[in-house]
Length: 284
Length: 159
Ligand SMILES: Cc1cc2nc3c(=O)[nH]c(=O)nc-3n(C[C@H](O)[C@H](O)[C@H](O)COP(=O)(O)OP(=O)(O)OC[C@H]3O[C@@H](n4cnc5c(N)ncnc54)[C@H](O)[C@@H]3O)c2cc1C
Ligand code: FES
Ligand code: FES
Image 1 (cartoon, rainbow over the protein chains, first blue to last red):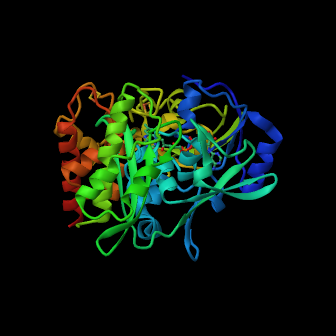
Image 2: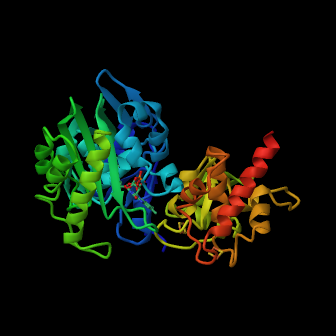
Image 3: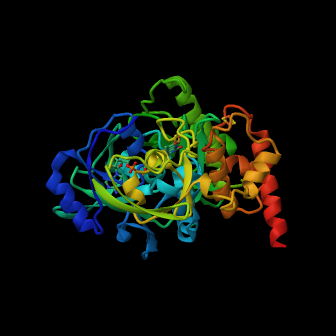
């Protein structure tokens, strides 16, 4: 289908983008890679009056290093995130999960910021950034603010961003010596996860000292598997891990759809958590 | 209306377009380049894959205004200007990598991107590199063979 008509602006700076959004009010939308937004416009599931294309704003692209954090521009494409040596060194979980997103052509256009702002619980990167304790930096008419990933995803396709704010960058604390794994369960013909589990593990003397687990598609927002994280502290060996992983679906609210029932998703969350933690903790 | 300048298959164009015009419709309906087909509404099938500034994109999921100032290559821009086939096109022909041919332009453009990033892929890497492109006829086997054959030819040309 052909999208409904809209106006188009292509600012060259974040300030211009914010001004364009403020002027247009609620009916404007940011256009990043367009890989979620353009299909929605074509299916006429969204009717913005103005698209503010942030695709040519150089300050929103690329990866840089600060003392204890990696700063990734919101407009950095999936392709560039995956290939970036800083990301591979300091946020291996993000690189590994991004490799599982969609397909090469979609990864050439789709962006990290777009993936997070879209706030689809079935998307992979929200749960990953949640597990990494990332922070999202937004700029609006009242200046910049930093939103912890924990507070960013508010409901199905809803984020803490205001309509007049632009997500400009994502800050990821450097991972240090954490092991990681993204376990994604999906149908061969479909890249979208039925369930995904993002795991970071810090070991100390053969025991798990700390684990952080983000879950994809286990409710209206990505969630941390808090009960399993707590149960994993001090775990030693596969039996301990298997026992702790039984708590992975606690507190989740997965839906039932043609890819699986809620019970099936809960089961898969437990199975994938066990696998991911064992892989992230490395050979025991 | 917005004015755009794009180079498509080596030819420079300037046109006034509505912002909602998709790149694939611009190519097909305005420029008459119907070698790039449309297969779906969701960005899932890959039939419409072209190159934009050297990278494969699904032209149904890009606005023509987003391509402003850019360089587009479609399947029609491959090969010699006189009509000779390029190595991927020839390999698809020789390995019988198509039946109805609807997916072929997109497959070839996706395979170009794959071979640029990875000139010597394994069969598994070819399958993953083409995961955004659906074929309802061939069962993929001969498509993978064709891409591997074109890769071998590229390797030989370099040595
Ligand atoms: C065939 C296909 C398969 C896919 N498979 C997967 C998959 O397996 N896993 C996965 O995680 N994703 C998948 N995706 C989605 C893909 O990752 C998208 O790239 C991503 O969801 C959106 O990024 P984008 O840059 O294209 O954003 P857009 O589509 O441009 O925008 C998406 C939304 O976010 C808003 N937005 C974007 N950027 C900003 C910003 N900087 N500030 C404020 N708001 C902003 C937009 O207004 C819009 O509402 C798939 C997509 C397709 C087409
Ligand atoms: S027409 Fe199906 S992906 Fe573009
Ligand atoms: S040859 Fe018919 S869809 Fe691929």
